[in-house]
Length: 175
Length: 175
Length: 175
Image (cartoon, rainbow over all chains, first blue to last red; front, side, top):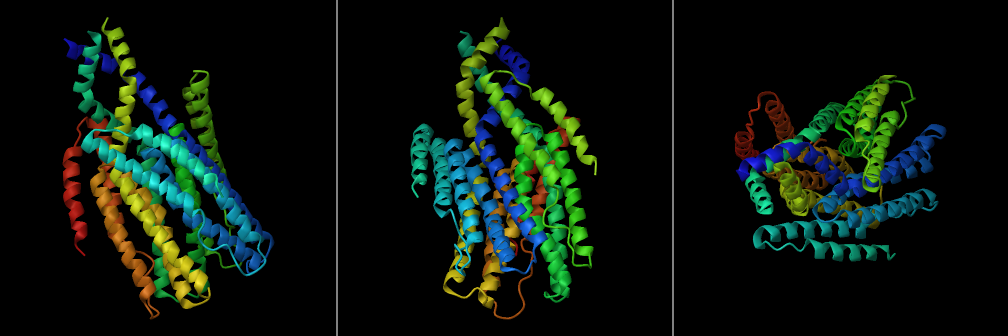
């Protein structure tokens, strides 16, 4: 008797379950989507700078080479950044991952401006935001390790880990 | 009594629920996957063009520089495009997002061919498909805004928004 | 009566369902996340090589151009690789997709080392890992085709397809 009750209620509740699941999906990723959106707008800003330099000036000037190189270095690291931020957000907790992503975008903006503004030969190097990417990689590793623990030992430390991660993400603010 | 009924039926239905969820997951993304696949094939086409130019000709000819630059510009924007299309598809509705993605691929093909074919100095610029990317960014924003409304006011306008988005995506066909 | 029973038990089980769903989500992607993490570490290795060459040597030497070009070629293909691996993993089965991804990373490492080490003019070309990417694209196609079959005919061949894919992925080991 209970079996048919369960099945019928399950079938009747399927549309509701779908709606709930839809909201749950968005709930788990909306901060990540927000940071992704901001990063896309920043990419558009970089691209517009290159486009402007491309149109109004000669493409062989040092200014064009500088802005093109800065934009390309940022784009080279962009796919890596997105991948690691989304993995960290999905595996462990989205709030610290999105926060770290936001700081990364600030660092990237500083890098881009620093690259463009310099008149001397020295540039700020090829890499930037190393500390933030390390933090995100660490979050992924901890998330997967926790999943392995859940499977093997049946003990779920996700709540503790989320608290620790949230506290640790504040350390990224230290310059 | 009802509690145990619910729990038992839930546990008995878990495999079925897993199977249903699996189909639901694919249902929510299959159009996005399809467009991603087409974009990957297009990337392969671009890469083969570069490879061909690289092998059979000198790498210092203007033709090689042209095709290499066109391919690089397309690749620079590729991660951005993928991120924004998937976000729009997950947050709001996959059909308009996939449709916009498809039009973007057509625009990208035109851009690539236009870049390669020109013999004069002038190139089609650095950016392309701005209108489509704006549309996708707008879709993301609306999707997140709707989620905030669901959380705060409890009112879900997703059905209206999906209808409006579908109608609006047809406007992208206007050249 | 059963309806209220179902609803009440559903509401009471919602936190448990959320927890289960969370574990299910991680269960379906943890191998993909692992491969993504390894690829990120490899990207960091490539970037450090470029950074090192950039800092301690002149940026106009052939060595710098070689390592910069190798890194750029790898980065150009990176977004494509990630997209196709995740699509294959989500649409069909994550184990063969992650395995193919792992082999791709080995091939990429060989390509990078081969590009850097050569002193003659000839380079290993622009493309690499074509066979693996083809395999992943095929996996996506089969996964979507299976979903269409589920919708139209109601027959689910996923189990057979997963077994075949697992067997076929072993063929990638043949050099």
